[in-house]
Length: 261
Image (cartoon, rainbow, N blue to C red; front, side, top):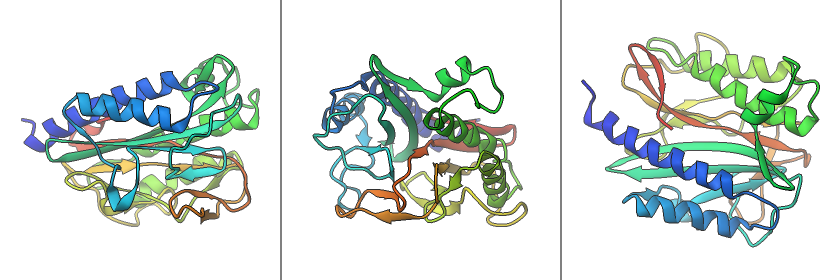
């Protein structure tokens, strides 16, 4: 039987998933981060839920819009997206006492945007070597998320998740951000335990049944070191190279990991 927590988080995750789909569909040249944020916030509020990030430690928006070298926590602005921009979209939803958290990265195109799922379908190489570096980056980051999710099993450890993600990403020559990690999520948007995207198998926190965690690989083309921007929110690559970010909220069950978002 489902717990009240799981029922609420499934609903929260559904709202979040639907909001992110709307956001991705809205991405196109000429639209601003502020406009995209309004789409996300309005949808969530109309579902009798709340954007988790808005007001959290003073963050001014419901949606994080992180462009090109900005890894996470980008504040939506009046900057109008351009063809070729790589955009990370990170969103949280609070519904019936519980939060969920999810993120995607897309590339702006002349007609809208292209997603990792679409690129993976059109690539005819298992290593994505027929794609350019920007396209390959989001495909590898996307795939690493699901590789990490597969390790979210009862009795496993957080290091199992981290090692599998790191091994896959570094095989392609990309960097794994270490200053930022995944986390528990539930009554609070950020909870214990930390879920790093790097590490060693059989190390870290033990994963337990009914636990809900956010797994979120953050990947860079160049060096993995990051720095906080002048607005004290955005976190960008130190060397200015591109980055990508994907995230799902996961419920750990006796039948394996369940994606809530």
